[in-house]
Image (cartoon, rainbow, N blue to C red; front, side):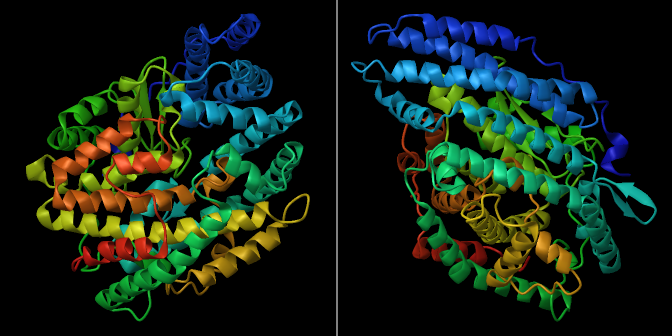
Length: 571
């Protein structure tokens, strides 16, 4: 029986009845209202109320569209919002930020100093003529989601979702794994031409936005928009070098050992996810309800406050069933600030990876809830991605002791060790893949051409990166994959958002190292850092978590070795 056989009936999400025209009217009224240093705190609260409803509406429209990519009404509502309302609301938001900054005798409190600095950047980069370009980009990213949602895998007479097909790669049956891998590649190949077309349209739009803002290239624009004050593009390139030097050789050694344990000369791409000792794939749950219940037990054992935060997700704030019309491979947490509820989207098929993903997304949800509980304004909660991903990835590791059934989890001691080893190998692999994905974006968005590189040039650059970060995998016969490995959702939807995963995992490994020595203290520091939201600079947030924001060669080496040393004989 597959998890699809016991899937609960999906209830269509109803978007909150928030009228975008009302948001416009409220924003215009604030723009016309007087504000002084004395009245600024109340004015900020009034602006926050508009922002809360905007975020609630945006989150709801996105959720409705993602939960059913075939729902034409949901798609139309989303596109109407981003095309006909977001441009005007963005203009008004910037005008309100400019109005607040113009009160020169006002000094914001320390917890809003970062927000004030962010507003200055927003005002400096805003160009009204860029708004139609942003609307075009939103339409194209929606099209990407629709195309990705159409991906189907034909395997042994069955039509599978991508997640269901990927689960076959964990089978001890190597012939099945190989068939599954080829079938997955065939499914991906069917949509690649359309993805290429979409990306070819996205690149020049993003380059035009950067030029419109008076910047040299889109990388510079993205860096400023992401408020990356602690490190430069050159620092990112230096991190790529550290990963190539320190992580790639370690991961190659791990793969060589895996090949020996499997009795192979070299690993093929369908040999990465199976058990090295020939055991059946981990199957922690057989229904989404079972997954939700098990997670509740784990978080209760970990921490009472986090267990209460997890309970907020239940009762309709998670969509985890693997329906065909969902976006394959897409998982995220979003926060509905008016409802004061976190929301998690994923397609669970009964694998260990699902369990890992849900611990990850729960970490994001905990971040949202702890920040909401402490701070009254959305401005307090504008967390940086490097901190958001620390929240999620550290939770993957902090929950490792609770994977076993005697602690409320899903596994025997033996299977929990397998799950831990898989996570640590995945962490090493993430450091490598994040460096590759970041590197290809540096190439794309600093390219001298006004329209960006051609798709053929991107393919060729990806092959060069594949060679630079080669971990010893035998990819014979998969030249197309070696060219198209850059077809990941982030490049389409979230440009220059990927290296944060690697940076944050270096932080998460430090949190885990602290937990191995003093688990209660490490968890307390983790929660304290999350509760600060966006009220402190990034390096101070990491310090509050008891760690360093660092990605120098020495740090990369020591933490990647920590992961290797903890693998045991399970990888």
